[in-house]
Image (cartoon, rainbow, N blue to C red; front, side, top):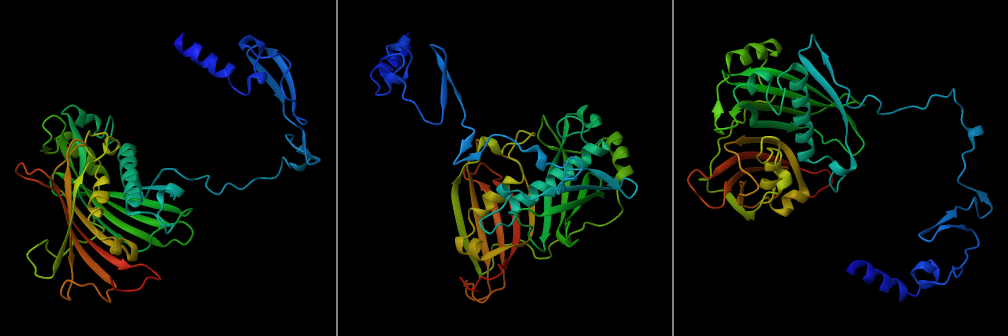
Length: 365
């Protein structure tokens, strides 16, 4: 009641009182007339208006159907987007995507997170197609044991970043990874040129949803998986350089107080592995971000975390010139993501990236 009285008093004291029905104290018929809009009073609560049919002597609001040829076929440039299909006797899964405006950066190129999201989407869709995923991120056999899939490692090489509006095709196939893992191999191809843009290998393992610890494959799960394995090594070779912070030619950059958002959580109730990339990039110097782009990347995931945790990100730049980057076509970095409050094993992820100079950028930082 208080709200209604307040609203009424505001209306009655408004300079537009004359436009309101007499029920609220206005003067009926005091509405100012617009030369192009015809008003019709329907009740004390509202008015109807008839939109003008001409603007500057041009007819509007009507479709000239004589201009439409019902037999003419309108081309649909993206009619096959999102279409999933299995090829080569069901061993390779294929899907197409269009790079959207919200997936690119200031240079109109897809971000690393965009590439990883599409690679994740294709991997999951492949698993769904083959029955590896039934409810959540586990198969029907895995759900009996409260098991789910998680990513343990990602290796990716970017030959060229797709741009806004590009249509890309992703091929995905699976291979065995030891006794308790699956290797997802993916290629990212430009549909127009056929050029391979991205090559990636992601390593998946099984986690118990109750204990949050890694688990072995149940026999029935393994038997189902083996039918779809392709006997080939990982598409991206292992990085040969070891991870170390003891070298003299390393420059350290730190970003503390990182707080994941609630929206960063995924279906496994922890921060999605793609979000880790944004967190490690927080400690990369701005000059590298602006002048270079990621050429290759290796990420090793050690443990999960949620939006309740506070993190710190480290980037170590490897140089050969007294910790100065000059005249470099490539820059190598090591990355470390940790819990800010050390409660024992604080390492969440380690990574290595190689950055190449962006086209048209000058060398040196």
